[in-house]
Image (cartoon, rainbow, N blue to C red; front, side, top):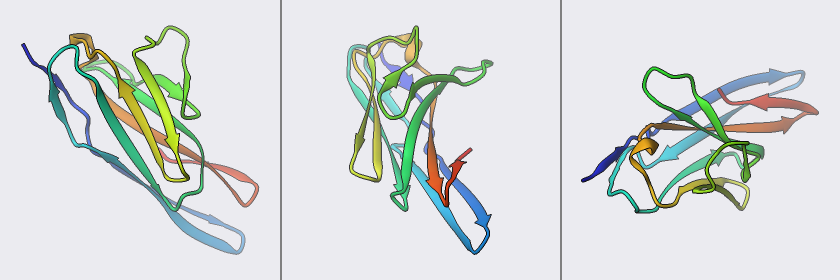
Amino acid sequence: MRVLLVIRGITLLLFFMFSGSSGEIMVTQSPGSQSVVPGQTVSITCKVSPGTGYCFSWYQQKPGEAPKLLITCSSSRQSGVSDRFSGTYSGNTDFTLTISGVQTEDAAVYYCQSQHYINSQYVFTQ
């Protein structure tokens, strides 16, 4: 039996303007999707450009449900989230969600979000 773990590759783009400055933040998620056998370990990575991330979060969305926050600030698992889910942050640009011992109920769409602190203001990708 195989489990289709849908990991939608998304590119989130946020344009922002502050007094005297403008720029953009790109968040790219990979891979696009994976089909895995229960029990396998799978990793999903988001890359942030430029590397100005302050806090990174992972969400899981199952069909017909609202997104559920799994991990915030790279590695803080939310209450009630299985310890099979873990987050890591590498350097200034990469953050990874790892699901150990994948189970059929893990089939979902996974989203990453980044939070930035720019010009003394917090900025979120959406």
